[in-house]
Length: 267
Image 1: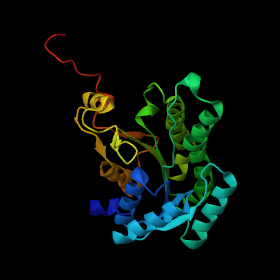
Image 2 (image 1 turned 135 degrees about the horizontal axis):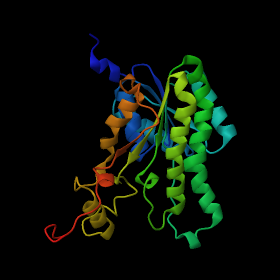
Image 3 (image 1 turned 180 degrees about the horizontal axis):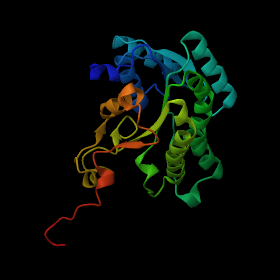
Image 4 (image 1 turned 180 degrees about the vertical axis):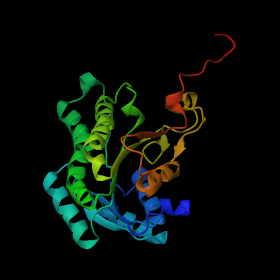
């Protein structure tokens, strides 16, 4: 009988994590590397790529860095071609790069709304289209789109982000409908509220948003970036070969929870 742990190995697989220089993307990239993958990360800033490469090295891991804009078709074509030439054809793609701009709908310039859509929704399409042809030829591949709780929920001030992430959820399912026949698995990860450099202030004790998150999360805590690594490795591995078109929410139970009453006996 085959060792089940071998199904989770990513040994010698070529993986690209977009926006993999910090936060969630960086953590997932390290997880793939620890599972044996030959990891590539991208960013639009050279100094971020240099810093991330040094951090990988300090952890005893190797990473290859490539600078290109994931929302620009020509740059993506050049960047992916460089990866294929220097490292090899991509086996695993994690579409992680994204931005958020907080603004009420009436106050948000259309140009900013379009920018959020371009980076969070159109860019995963651009990168996936460039990568998937080689996956079709090999009849194997993994694409993981980083979705969000905002793929399911709306909330004030994040209309563009929610629209993009909601679209990404359905794009993931449509990719599955068209590409699953080539033995390509396309799934999404929906992080809950995760502690990163961008959310540290919100997660402080006493902050109103921290109280909201804890009140809605049955696990009664914020997620850590390492909470996402296992799901990423699983979806990138042969262990998930019959899982397709799914969004796995790593959220501590938020989507399962309608909310709590202060006195649950008084319903």
